[in-house]
Amino acid sequence: GIQVEQSPPDLILQEGANSTLRCNFSDSVNNLQWFHQNPWGQLINLFYIPSGTKQNGRLSATTVATERYSLLYISSSQTTDSGVYFCAASTGANSKLTFGKGITLSVRP
Amino acid sequence: GAVVSQHPSRVICKSGTSVKIECRSLDFQATTMFWYRQFPKQSLMLMATSNEGSKATYEQGVEKDKFLINHASLTLSTLTVTSAHPEDSSFYICSARAQGVAAEAFFGQGTRLTVV
Image (cartoon, rainbow over all chains, first blue to last red; front, side):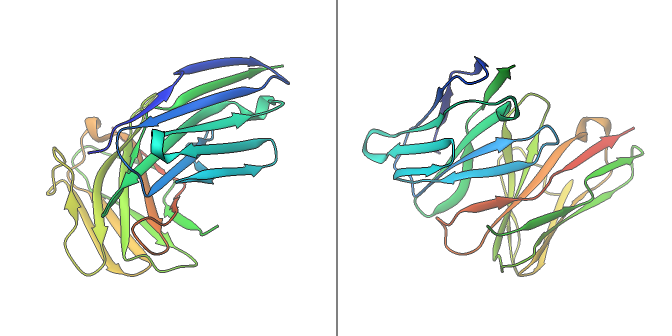
């Protein structure tokens, strides 16, 4: 099955800083999503982005499908951005999402 | 976005008993739902794919007799952990897609199961 790798595994930022989170995948994808898992475990949908670029407030994401990677950008980070960010992808007729190991982001005041 | 509701959010049960977790798509129909398990500080691992009106498809290594899945309608899938043991303690999360194999997936709030 598809392999999904995220980097870096941990990231510590000062409030107000910008960051880039990376997701590499091993096969062509028909779905790629970014999630933020809050302290209660809920997965919050950030982006559905199998290709192209999207922006939502301070967050934006880009997927370059031909090169098999996706980037999540966080600008002007806030302490509330802290948590775990997951990338997940699926391929072909298999609709199962495979998750990366996640990136733990800590934003310090 | 679409809403997926999972219940209960937290359950504590005695070893040897069974626990049922419900997953509902509130504003769309889902012919396929997915069940994941997440251990502390780890990623989500797919356990099984729940298919409306047919048997679930289990991932390798997941015991189908222990984790019973029923998808009786287009808006409800249930996961029953049978004869639970402390090692089954985990965070269980369901997911559903509105339509199409590549459609955006939405997740329930998760169920934290503790077996004592």
